[in-house]
Length: 345
Ligand code: ZN
Image 1 (cartoon, rainbow, N blue to C red):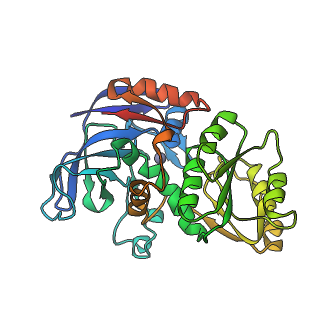
Image 2 (cartoon, rainbow, N blue to C red):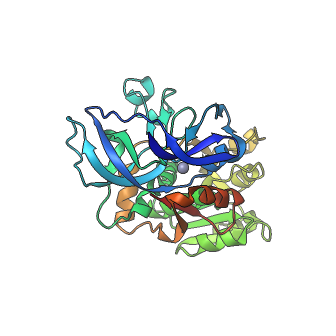
Image 3 (cartoon, helix red, strand yellow):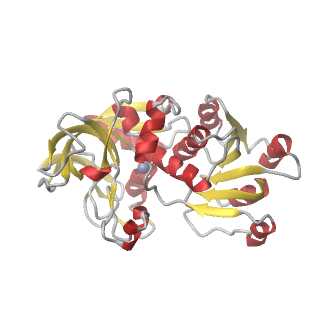
């Protein structure tokens, strides 16, 4: 039995003992969890009990954005040793699946992802995880930053999918944690200028702290007017990253992308949204989608370690494990100036 932060059912959390598997396989490592970030998905399971087809039917340990220290290694593991500081990629695919063989293991239908029902998450003092999905943190990357590699990986994956070129002008629609991290990943990947939109001044102010990021409050300004000034009235941005999932953002994305440009769909709308196919065809734009990430953890860690991405301003508050339930209540409040809340075990 282990102590864990358990979602009993929609709206009900407890910090209690729960039986979790403890066996370590030859290719696994055991990790003492240090820091776990609270993700929008964790909060959504808490407040709604489901995300799309994934429904919480029995008690589930939450958390999937984690860093920690290796405490035991399986007999085949050569890449890590006891005492290594690490972060973990939370989705484990079937290595023999056709998706995995294609390198797109993130879309393997059999992937087991922490805190996606019925798979338990990592808000518990110790976990066992495959070494292949456990990444050593350089000394200059903190546990707090290590626990943010997971959401940053979404942004890095989006930048990879965009195939950014040096000096590209980008627009990110939506200034949540993923939108901000996507903007930072785009800049670190060579973007020359990144505009980011939102309705909440507090969120835009946080994004605007970063050199190269220009916040646009779409309650006050039409984003297309800003792009007219930056790129010319008959042109647009090279890449739009849609990171809001808000139905109105898709028209903005189509209006702001340049002919022959790219839209990367990062945000996930809760319901089906209308999308103007002809507008996309008339500019012959390239469209890419992302689902989580694949093959980018080491890249994301290197960008943090090299100082090309500074995640430290995005940690809004840190809670102890004992305060875990209050941390989730705070996250459910969705304060506009909270970017990332973290729990330290
Ligand atoms: Zn997450």
